[in-house]
Amino acid sequence: MSAVATLVFCAPGYPGGAGDAQPFIDQFAKAAVTAAAWPAGSLAAVYDPSEQSGLLKLGGPDAVLAFVPFAFFVQHAAELHLTPLAQADVVGVGPQERWSLVAKAGAVTGPPLMAGYTILSVAGYAPEFVRHSALEAWALPPDVRIESTGQLLSALRRVAAGEHVVALLDQTQAAALPTLPFAAQLQVVAQSPPLPVAIVAIVDSRVPPARAKSLQAALLKMGHAAAGADTLSALRLQGFVMPQISRPAPAP
Image 1: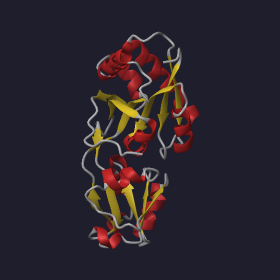
Image 2: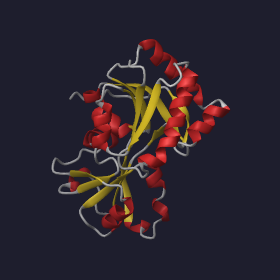
Image 3: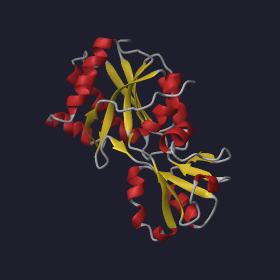
Image 4: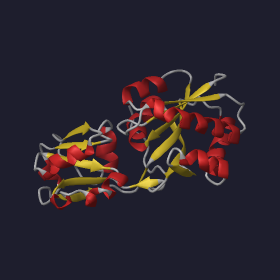
C-alpha cells in the first residue's frame, strides 16, 4: 500500500456535490485512521457522485478502499475486485433496506405485463442489481429497459400518468410515497428482500490483512464512541456492522 492511500466515496444518482461532501469525508477518513491505529495522514478521501468518474478513481493505484451504495457494489465488485469490509448502518434506515417497484395502480399485476416498460431508478446505472438483487423474485421480460434518474418526482408523475414506465425506489423514497398528491394513482407491486444500503470494501487486495483487520474493528466500534458518532452523523450514519451479503458478485 502506498504511503498515502485513497478512500473513494462514490454515490451515483444521489444529490450533493463533491465540494459539499468533501469536509465530511475528510473528517471520516481522519477518524477511521486514528481509530484503526494507522499512521496519521496515511488515508485521504475523495467523493465522486458520478459512476464513470468514480470508476476511474477506483481504478487508480492509490485507491485502496471504496465506500459505495450496494447497487454499485453489485454492479462493479467483480471488475474492481472489491472485498466487503463493513456495511453502513444508515440513520432512519438501518443496515438493510427494501426496494419497492411502483407502477400505476392496477396497470401491472405481474411481470409479463411489464413487457415494453422502462424502469426508472436512482440505481438504474446498475442493471445487474436491479434485475438480480432488487427484483430477483420478479422475473422481468427481456425487453424491459432500465434507466438511471435522480428526478424521482418527475418519474413518479410519469408513472401516475400511465406512461409505460415504473419506478424502483429505495426505502427512503418509498416511505415518502403517501405524501404525494397523486399517491392514490400509484401502487407498490413488488419489493426486494432486505439488502445492504452501502458497503465499505477493499479494492483489489490493496490493504494488507493486518491493516484491513484493524480498520474493520475500528469501523464496527465507531458508532459507540462520542467522537465517532459525531463524525458519522455528518454522513447520516449511525455505525457499521459486519457485511451481510447473501450472494457473490457476478463474474465479469
